[in-house]
Length: 187
Ligand code: IMP
Ligand code: MG
Figure 1 (cartoon, rainbow, N blue to C red):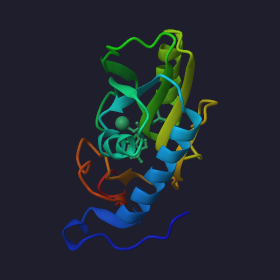
Figure 2: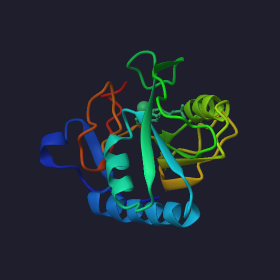
Figure 3: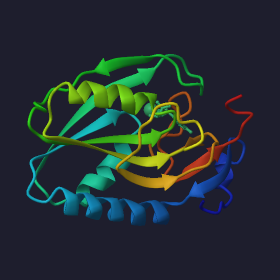
Figure 4: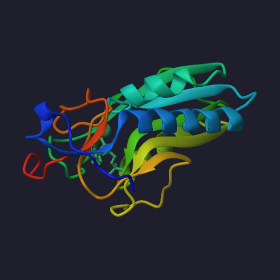
């Protein structure tokens, strides 16, 4: 588990600590891209990213992948603004053809696994040639579905994390680091 440092002054009321800093994120994202490049060499790659939390991660990741690829998005969110995983709703459907393609599904964090389970079931129904998953973060303690990420950036503790795409009530996605939100903010 990474060691933590204090957040910038202007965030100290809300963010408890920086869990993973910008430099560490950038280095790990390059490694993930290198692993993906190696495994998908000579394949017809379709990257499917989940909205909205993947945006910074996805933008950094794909710039380090030199393979030809297509990119599409699926919108999925759970009801409400709370931190408890709720019922899933699809807010945007896939537009590109997935049949017979090598699909890489990208999400921000694998927690209970309900999101990845629902989306991988949906994608598998489209008969891709292969389907792999890539998540920036994973929390192992709350897993409810038997599902693992094929490419995982970092394992994080069971705390609410924000930044680098991850939100609380749609805020904090723009932070360049991954921080632990103070419990009183999301209580
Ligand atoms: P799962 O369906 O429980 O695996 O959760 C996946 C989704 O829950 C992610 O795409 C996030 O939107 C959200 N999520 C889970 N844990 C956190 C967190 O610590 N911070 C922000 N979002 C989270
Ligand atoms: Mg999300």
